[in-house]
Length: 114
Length: 110
Image (cartoon, rainbow over all chains, first blue to last red):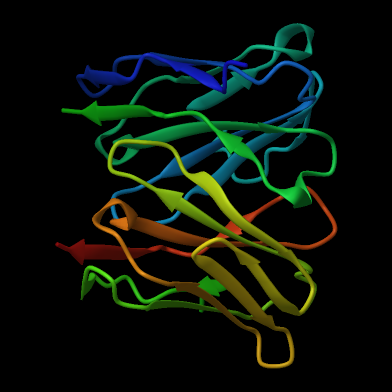
């Protein structure tokens, strides 16, 4: 079984440019998460989806970040425009409902804004 | 104060040593306690999962949770160079959101 698949693995963009990350969760996992991990720190939640509904987006900087999960499967996270401080690893994870048992993470997208 | 705290390390030990990694938390609502291992340039992978207080053993790994002192430990016996990674403590209440510590970087030297 394929794990959580993310693309691209690496992205370098100039500030003020837009960027998008894609995630394909494990088949059957209805809960999908986007986390951001800064260098030397633990992951921090940006948004959580239950099927296609965003149920927790309180930490998502809505002025520049947006996300969608069409048909309750794949998800896209977008930043427009990117700022230098957005450089980080963006991790996608998925779980069955009741993720207190732990999530499965993808390998992440490493974003560098120059 | 962060909800989940870990010493960032790095912790350097010789191969074969017993490793103790620790984590403290402040939220009394946490009931689920996990340890994730993260290799460089990889996503975190679930290593150990514990519900409420107590011990759990899986091979060379033992997780301990003491809810009375809000203290969590991960022990690694007979440590191997392949155990070199960052270890993330993650806690959750009855809901779906995990709160992570900053991670402890472990280096096991041959």
